[in-house]
Amino acid sequence: MEVMTIVGFRDMSFKGNDGSQVNGRQFFFTMADPYVTGLTAGKFFLSAAALETVGYIPKPGDVVEVFYNRFGKVSQIRPAQ
Image (cartoon, rainbow, N blue to C red):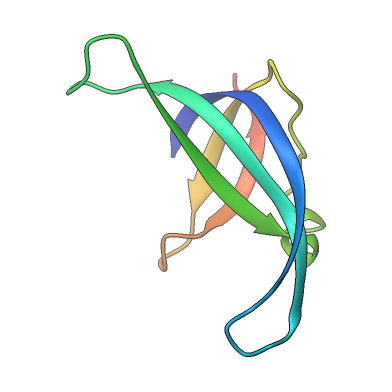
């Protein structure tokens, strides 16, 4: 689990490696990192199907807890406590 601040997002649509259409949303975030002075920044992508199952769809400015599955993919998002 990581705590991050969502700073933006963009909706995306592209062809996957197998030629299928992929729709979803890319999120941009900042978060604390013990190896960085200040904050680190990053991004993650959720397909349209994943957006329906993660539990909470964050907006810019939201501080969230992000959980990952055993494959390193985002599996759950919830507002930070």
